[in-house]
Amino acid sequence: MKALFWIGLVIVILGVASLFVPIPRHDTEGIRVGDLSLGIEVRREEKIPPALTAVMIISGIGAMIATRPKK
Image (cartoon, rainbow, N blue to C red; front, side):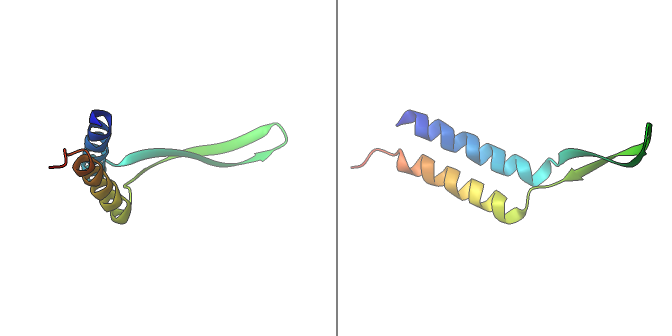
């Protein structure tokens, strides 16, 4: 049961961090004609949608609550 608590804690931490830390993404766009290629690398920083972040935080808290000893 303690493993579930720690997994829930990690999910909560990742959910909170995803609110502030953008995820970098690299794309290459260009054209190729025969042996000649012309391209550019585009770097974007995207954040995880807030709805997914909320689901991560709520499920992590749920996992942590599920490990509480029953009285």
